[in-house]
View 1 (cartoon, rainbow, N blue to C red):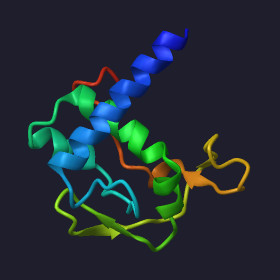
View 2 (view 1 turned 90 degrees about the vertical axis):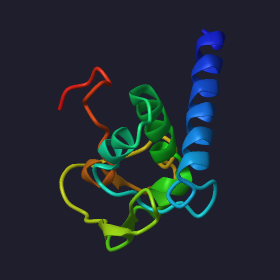
View 3 (view 1 turned 180 degrees about the horizontal axis):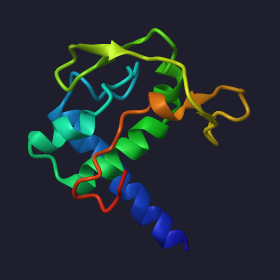
Length: 123
């Protein structure tokens, strides 16, 4: 069981590294900003592998730094760092295991959508 977790952690780390190197205006290590809704489709259009998108976005958007940035009214950015809408608070709220102790909540609608194309997931 430990080996599986280590492999998943390595895959997530590698995927995030690739995103940080490929799109430095959008993906950063500190001071994360909310990403554009539908950013996965933009990444696919620029040639990023579907599995990298799936693993990278899942890990990046579940991080405490990203969840802290998701506040109503905060500006979203696209892959080039340009403004791409704002965060809205609406819909069903879900709580992240990493933020349960702090009482913060993140709305499922406020997370960037991952593309269902090529990831084995439907909408």
